[in-house]
Amino acid sequence: MKIRTTLSARLGIDYPIIQAGMSWASSNVALPAAVSNAGGLGVLAAGPMRPHDLRNALAELKASTDRPWAVNVPLYRKGVEEILDIVAEARPPVIIASQGAPGDHLKRFHDLGSRWLHVTAFPKHAEKAARQGVDGVIAVGVEAGGHPPDDGASTLVAVRRILQMVDCPVVASGGAADGYGIAALLALGADAVQLGTRFLMTKEAGVHDDYKQAVLAADVGDTMLAGRGNLPVRCVRNEFTDAVLQAEAAALPTSDPQAWKDLLSASTLKQAAFDGDVTRGKVEAGQTAGLISDIPPAAEVMARLIDELKEAFGRVEAMSGRVNSRSEFA
Ligand SMILES: Cc1cc2nc3c(=O)[nH]c(=O)nc-3n(C[C@H](O)[C@H](O)[C@H](O)COP(=O)(O)O)c2cc1C
Image (cartoon, rainbow, N blue to C red; front, top):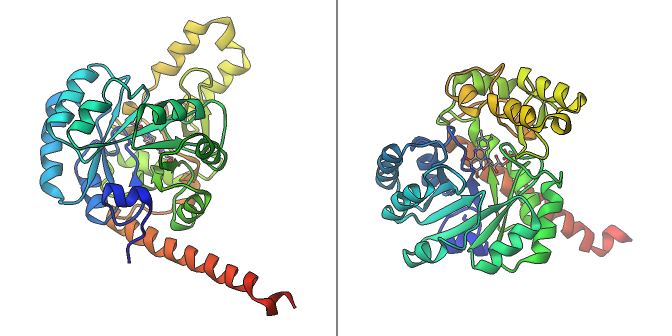
């Protein structure tokens, strides 16, 4: 049984489940191919990829699945024009853009037949992207791994607020790691749910094993939002986040903004994801790290998500049956 929403029908996927674009973790073919082949939307993360690696990966991904797939392009990355040219050559079924405005590029990709989903951390950016004609906005809440919004709005609140403001489909991102979370966000009004940390914790994800072990060991309170006011990043607490807390306590962001910026950029995701330095690097992960206790293949994650989603829907149906029954109230 497929689960159909307006957006899943438009994208041609069997389930309204999107594997989030994650630099390093999904900058490979294996993860997006596995998710797309299992009926979700797999997303290749172009963020850290060199142009020729991206071109090869796009060709390989196209050959690995006959189902819809997507590519994530952070629009602020260096050399983005060349990256967009390479992506356009591949005619992706879906492009997921983050960190920038869609306006300049939308027509080109629509002319190629691609759908454009736009990641937004703030309701007013979502409204602007919707006005420019994107096919959907992805609303990211503060629970999310990567770069969640600075304003601290949770996914529960951000999605409702954005639904009040736009008339295109809204995808919820942040805080879902199982089918129950997906069911809750679909019930809230989302047209699909994007999961990052859950797919980070799969065999196919392209991060160092020590990174996966650090996320496995983390509980729901063991991540923090580091660098408020300066493209904050949610990551697992370690020496880097301790240094950030100490700097904040010493008022470094206001007393020496350049030293604050230097501190935030001295540690990187690559350091943790590629080199395996999980003590000083940025171990980006969401609060759902605490809900995850294994590292299975992505296809198994998809199968579980679908089973749990159906179970959650069944639970709600049973509840509403009871509420509607006169005898329950008698
Ligand atoms: C390791 C990691 C890397 C990420 N890299 C990107 C990226 O390159 N582009 C992007 O748009 N979002 C990125 N994100 C954010 C995810 O796309 C997604 O919004 C987030 O993981 C959803 O929250 P969740 O982790 O609670 O599921 C990243 C997240 C993680 C955990």
